[in-house]
Image (cartoon, rainbow, N blue to C red; front, side, top):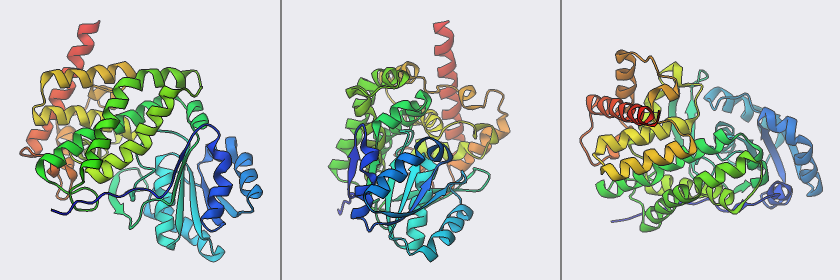
Length: 367
């Protein structure tokens, strides 16, 4: 059997790392299109311009429109093409970063990824998740290479809302469970081949790190400070989860997330929040041991991840809508078919209902 793992070329993390961005982009060719989330332009624009100028990087700064869609990728590529850029850098959150990767792919140039939050495992991957302009999941864009650079300034991450760090933990929480499902079934990872033991070991380290340091990292983020616990969880959310999902594989949790996106009520909730609920549903789907289920629910409660449908905007969801989400999760080609158990719309619907009911019962018992 051939196994395959893929990794970014260079990973830089630490307080103050943003000030090294100019030097890092100079290594990648120097002439850059730098895509900024709107808040990045407001809060960090001068600092970014200074590090680029200091390193002699010729750059065009452009503000992201907010959705990683084919339309936005085409708009930005059209701006960059006549400039002869050699690297595209994206600075912001998950959809911003996926857009930068897609634009760099369109232009056939190198890409640098600079997350300002630790809310998803997208930064390290050779993958962009493409949505419609309205925010519904459209497709995965599988890229030929991983980012040339991932740079994370933990002092910037620490100033972001705690909810975003927690959402990243929700995304990362799925990593080990989905990699395990792929390992058991022998399913392919994002390369189409099974992952090696390295990928599964990193996925387990991701899970263990979250459970040990998650609450302490939340406390640090509440105070806007960088601590060893925060550094560990940022690395788990970003690097370990990125390597674990991409080289270990995806399964039910992310498919259920994708199904939930067909319901407009969920669009105000973060990717990782919906993935966390998908993880809980996947435990029900697979008949996980009760002790493990309680351990995961306990973690979600401790850091503030959703354990009920109401917590992702679906308090009054109709049976018809929930069935529609379950059916979308089971679409042909979805990663839920990497699960080692039988999959049907009805079984997934039942798992979602059971996960919600158990979450509500635990909330009631705490009252």
